[in-house]
Length: 226
Image (cartoon, rainbow, N blue to C red; front, side, top):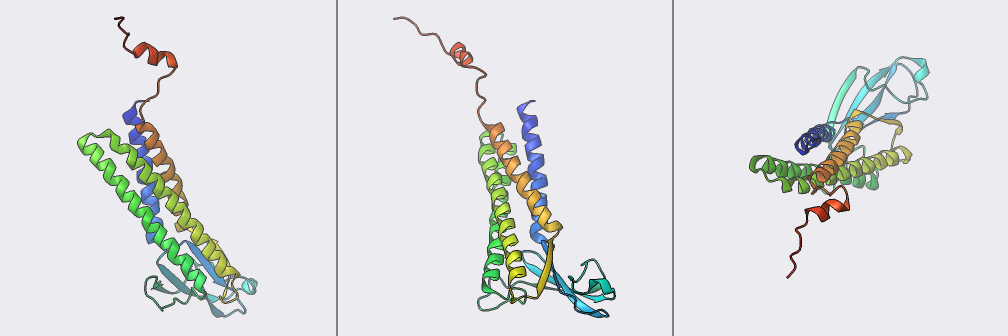
């Protein structure tokens, strides 16, 4: 396969990875949380959240078999209300982050995701400069930037996973049930595509190694006897 074809495939994989990561960062379905349902013919408050915003939904419960279990599913109709996390406002707490360590986890996940976006932007600039000016050596730093973006993405995923786990385990929160939703899946897909695409671009841009040692010897200029 020709080198240019390999570069185009790597760039396509990276574009899909960037779209997945951007989608995960701007959407609010990383995790869905549910409190315990105590009785029927009343409302319970389920929630879903992302890196920046928490959305709560009041769901009216009518089925007896939901008593003692989690509220939901979140797709049921109900009154919807969203509020942004006050990540960078000192002294202000969000309702969902009742425990200080949970807020720290959430802030860390959001900050790391911003580093991922920054690396994606730097990698994209390197590729654009390479395509515009024909400087193939820029593919190497581009590949490294995208690989770093992928590592930041999976780090953000793990931090948010730990945050959700602490929320469920804490006695200070009302949540008893949870599951990870499609925004979380987009972040995982973004990690895989960015990391593998970045490594692929880096390997394709490396100088081609000789197939065997004899090729190097045969290509060398003969020595002249003095």
